Amino acid sequence: MASVKRLLLAFAVTSGFLAPPALSSAADTLSTQRQQELKYMVQQDCGSCHGMTLKGGLGPSLLPERIAVLPEQYLIEAVTHGRPGTPMPPWAPILTTAEIRWIVEQLKSDQLAQTRAD
Amino acid sequence: MKQHGSLYTSVNNHTRVNKSLLFILVVLCNVFFYASAWADCTMPDDLPTGDLGIIIERMDGSVLIINTTSQSVLYEVSGLGDLSHASAVFSRDERYAYVFGRDGGLTKIDLLKGRIAKRIMQSGNSIGGAISQDGQYIAVSNYTPGGVNIFSAQDLSLVAKIPATYGDGHLQSKTVGLVDAPGNQFIFSLYDGNEIWQVQMENTPKPAAKVIHKYKNVGKAPYDGLISANGRFYIAGLFGEDGLALLDLWHPEKGVQRILDHYGRGEKKLPVYKMPHLEGWAIAGDKAFLPAVGHHEVLVVNTENWQEISRVKVYSQPVFAMASPDERQIWVNFAFPDNNTLQVIDTETYKIIKQFQPGKGILHMEFTPRSEHVWVSVRDIDTVIIYDTQTMQEIKHIPAKKPSGIFFTSRAHKIGL
Figure 1 (cartoon, rainbow over the protein chains, first blue to last red):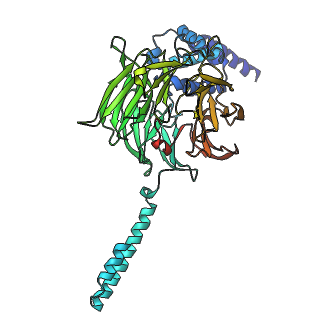
Figure 2 (figure 1 turned 90 degrees about the vertical axis):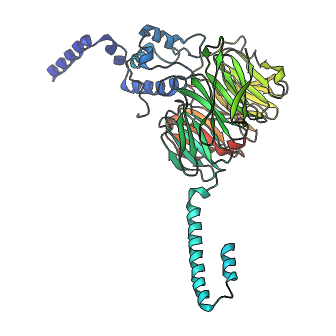
Figure 3 (figure 1 turned 45 degrees about the vertical axis):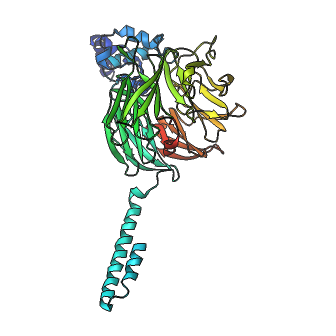
């Protein structure tokens, strides 16, 4: 059993090294349950301005085709500190840095946009 | 019944054979009559609509048609698209609901048949709408492209497109706070353009819409609007600065005045995680109750002189502050992340007389027209809770999938709803 565990650990470590940085970052630190909560929050609560399907409303669209050109760090800043002069509030009082990074990654890779089927 | 009776008496003088034949005929007629009458009674067309309403199920793109007397769901109607932030108005005969979806969909629902009568996609992205005083026109407020589209209430055919251009005329503003006003008018605000527009509907020679007034520089970023129950005052809430923009429609020559523009001065404005709503008119006597943007307060305003009377400290940032029809209570819900709480303000004492925490995602409230009950949608527990406004007890839970807006047909006869 011990050797199997070691093997698994070795596999996990090496795959961690081999995986692209975007996949290894935020998701690793968040529980599956927290990820589900964040997904729900983005759709329902961010959705009150950005639309439940994230195609935009009072706030702009958050679909990958629009935000692809925006650097990840820019989006993280926008979520963390808000966008002065617009209704976008700072989310730092509500979300951790890892959670904001995870949300941005998910938005970029189109993991949050599908909604009604859920 | 009368017809059948007179037919029988009019043939009394005929022969015996004819009489018995006729008797059979009459009996058969009566059987058919009663059978068809019975069939009619069971047909939905015979149901009254005065105690009906709809509940928006935002995730599933469906609505529930409900009855407020039996407190039950009659039908579920699906296929309405993206219903986040959806709202509805009713035809003056209370038979049809017009539902405004986020994705630009406009759906006319037949409440009696429990199905879609007509549905169109009228823009890319919309936020709400209104029905005209005469019931002939449905206006929809759009974000993309920014403007207002007006349709025939009958068949949803396009009557007019009003692009909300501002600045040098190349920019189109998102439009918000669209309401009907007396004189068969519509009023709305330009979120990006900082303007309020007044539109006159004309029925002859053919249906048309005319922008009769553009009030400019009303304040920064009007985010929503409402009209008083008598149709006199239009108020736009401002997001970009403290205060509200007030238009007296009895005296449009006075232009737009700014009211309460000092309410947040010197205080740190908190981040706003959900925009407040000004739907409805939380008014009791000569007092209006308005949500303060970025503050844990409901503002109390004297509607004679529009001066602040008081501020009620509440649990968090208010989203809706809605008056019960008997004007004794103001029910308030709150922005994320405090949307699990509901508070009730006494309109005489400004005291919080009750607090509920039934679940997360309290999104909307609707009172029965004579004030005895309030229906509250609690999104995250997939439930609409009915409260008794006197005992403050829960009466019933109605299951609904991710419920948001609740709208009763009594709105059909109210200005601005």
